[in-house]
Length: 290
Image (cartoon, rainbow, N blue to C red; front, top):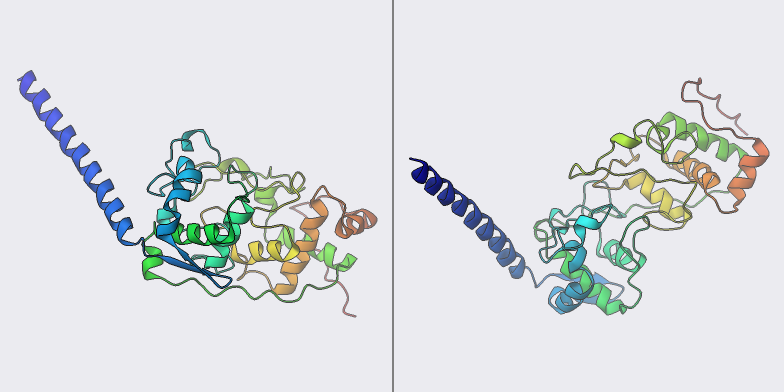
């Protein structure tokens, strides 16, 4: 009886193992059919098939042969590498929930992602990067079925003024940025320790006090874009439906005042004597119309 049970158990395990192998092989076979994927960046055409060697040299260790984020180094990395098969990316110029453009992916490869193990791949030529973009796209069925969203149109940046920095602090309070980023922007809000990414793994909010770069860029326009498109795959949502463009610019200016480097926004905040927000305070009165 015991021998029969063990035999059945081993047979079941073999079936499960065989199914897992078949599933993985099917995934690889399907991805190989998509090796004709292309990218189109700055007049260049990237070819997925041309990037196979560079992907294995630079990317497989973290992102895995199948692009599933399960490379041999992944267990030691925090935050975990992106799972390309899902077609979900943090850094995009497109609306939340939509695919990034080829330019978005190209910029990420060149720029890297701060507070992560994703470096700037400066040794790669522009054509190498365009080919890698195509290779990243070949991992996910989304790129075979969907088109990227339309890139966000960023309005002209207004002049930084004391009224705008103060208004930005009120936006920070109103849309409850403090719950994750903390009342001083240090990434230590009351929700910070509960946050998880799209695969239910712990993730930390951005700490404005320690960083001069953002996850997806360095400029005011980059920060505006993050606010209005969100970082898909993370708890950072898009605020495009919650705040107006002028309010987003105000928030950009206030967040700049929290960063460690010298800036006009920081000088203004110091001159105004701005204190950390009080989440329980009544909303500030609107500034008088000029």
